[in-house]
Structures are given as structure tokens and as C-alpha cells.
Length: 335
Image (spheres, helix red, strand yellow):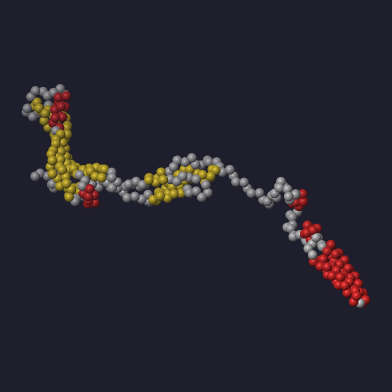
């Protein structure tokens, strides 16, 4: 609002100053004996002039000297203007003004994070990957070369369940490994022709592996033949009414074996035989026995089948004990 009180006071002051100055002029005309009166009038004029420079009255201080208030942002009119006019700014119970837009409430979702799969190293074989049992997630493993990728996915049909933002759902594992030695009859193949006294291991790497650990070796040869037995009279005629029986005869020769590189040196230790003749006797006795004046003889035989067997007992890089037997046929060469 305008400072109207200050303007009226200034006008009255000017009038009073004019009257005092006029009086001073008249006194000056009358002489020096009125010198004191002139000085007093000058002091009054000075005091009156200082009045407008004094601090504002208490009323002015309370009202801010009627200084115009700082401009306020214009209201958006309408309902906001009416609400601002009726609200008491000092009342803490008045509702706060609402923002221009209401935020969308978060849906009622439960966030879950999958548990990480684990891997356990295995000696000689690929590491084993174990996926956890989960109420919410299923796990799928895909392998490409020596890398295995495990992916966790939410199970279908789960309402109001979502993956925790930022949760890890994919893991990559290195499934490379150094294979342990496992000997097979094929990898442990050897040569033995019957004419040479000692066998020879074909694979130099296998021979080196066995010799490095001093693996014990065993060697044996087996010869098998099938004899067909019948009953004959003293003149060598077969009594066909009694039939015949075929039984296996087996001869085995055992050796101790000492490895020297790929060569295996043998030392004879013994032999054994399973004679088919004893089985033939038991067969005919079970048929009622032999007539007087008859005996059991060989009517025919198959060819001999000769097989050499080399056995090695070893412990591989993982500390696992193993045993392997390789076989090879051979021909008996007459001396």
C-alpha cells in the first residue's frame, strides 16, 4: 500500500518551517537584543527537519512500513483459488495440496532370485554340475565343447511372482578335464605268435605307463579242444546204441611276467588240465554203465583253439585301481 501518512507529515513540517523562518526574519529586523530568540528558533527548525529521518513508529514497524509485499506466484484459479482463500495457513490439520498427477501404485508382486548351481571337480572326468531344487525356478544345462551354461527360468503358472531385478539367472562353467588312464583290452593289445618266447605290448605309451608304476603282470596260454567220446568194443567197433558225448579238454600254462619297455619276459611257473575224458565216463555211467568187453574212446575231435592272455593290475592318476586282460590267438608251432 502507498505511504500516505509520511506525505501528510512532510507537508505539515514544511508549513511549520515556513512560519518559523518568517518569524526569524521579523526578529532580525528588530535588532540584536532578540539574538537568543533567533538561536532558539533555529534549533527548533533543526529538530523539525530531523523528525522525518527518525526510525518508523511502532505501528509502521508492525505493518512493515506499508512496504509492498513481494510478488507471489499466481494461483491456477478455479478450485485452487477458492481452497487457498478458505484454508488457514497456520492450521496444521489443513490437507496439503495434492500434486498434479497421482503415481501409479506398484503391483502386488513377490520378487524371487534363483539359487546358483554348484559344480564339483572330478578326477579324470568332467566336473559334475548340480542344480538346486526350487519352488520357483527350473534349470536347463547346455554344453558347448568344454563350456556348460546353466539357465534358470521361472516355472510357468506362477501368479504375482517375478525375477528379482538384477538377479543372476545364467551361469557358465568350465567342464574341461584331464582324463585318467583307463586301460581296455584294445589299448592293452599285445603280440604273441607262439614262436617267440615272449609277448610284446603294442602301445609304447601304455607300456611306459605300466612300467613307471611297476604294475604286476600275469601271462598264460590256454589251449582248448572238444573231443567226442563213444563206447567201443575190443575190436574198435562203436556201439551206437549207447550214443556219444562231446566234452571240452582244456590245457593251461602259467608264467610269471616282468616288463622291460614294451617287451614282457616270461618264466614258466606251472600248468593245469581239465580232461574231458573224466566227464565222458561220468556221462556213460549215468546212462546205465558200460557193457562188459567195452571201453570209452575218442570218436572225433575239433581243432585246437590257442589263446594267450596278458593281465595287468595298475593304479591310475586318480588313485583308482584297475585291472585289464588282453587276449590274442596264436598257433602252436611244433618244435
